[in-house]
Image (tube, rainbow, N blue to C red; front, top):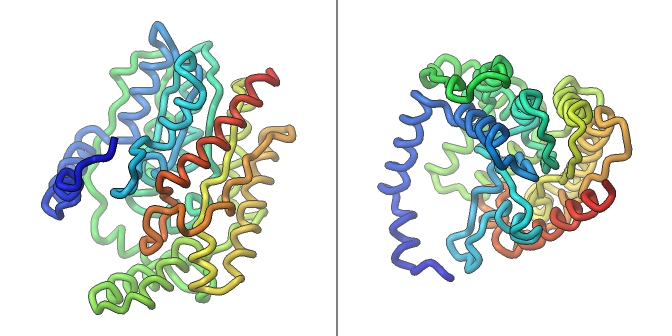
Length: 332
């Protein structure tokens, strides 16, 4: 059922959005969200009816377009496609990447239950702007979750720490990040993007934003790929069946802004991710080739350079994931 226009406008009012953001930040200071998700996962695994599937997801799961008639999240669409007889536990969050996924997966060692795992390979999650980000890198949360003894009570799993200092952000802006725009640093993108937004230079803002989000290149021998291999090895060691898919990239918009090299770079980055995963899985694990198959019309907002899909994109990706899960379940 469509959400009334008045309700949508109320949800999107700047004051409402700001209040929600402030509330989330306040909660995270006393009960960090990624750590909170670990607590929820342990409770689900140790409950009387543990889930058949464990869906580990990035922020794409939680976004829905204001104009969507179908308001279901991607994971809900997947669950609906699999039927009510299959239960699913979802662990997702902003900028969740393979390092935090691997930390969550370690919690399964505290139980004999082995759900089928659904996990994305996300290019941006292996780039410096996200791995090294003082907040979105989730380094403290990952360290905390890896220290959890999964055999003990879930109520013990808590984390709290203050927001990073301005000095940490300044250091982050000095992190090297080469893209199609050259051998630049993080701040060479972040600061101009903010300035272009203030001045109303939308063309340059979009070009710089897409370079920042999608203009990098993942190399097979890069140390950051070890996290992908480590996650795959953990899933293999646990003995869980798995469905892996590529988080879609808005390559149509990116190439229009920055040239056809963006398509080549994206294809190479996905190939590097796939190879790194298979290096840890020890077999020819099927990886759903969804990363470059979505047109601009299936993303929520091409002007924010995110991978978030609208209802048409979510429906199509959900079908690809659901089909892969059914194949994996039937193959044993």
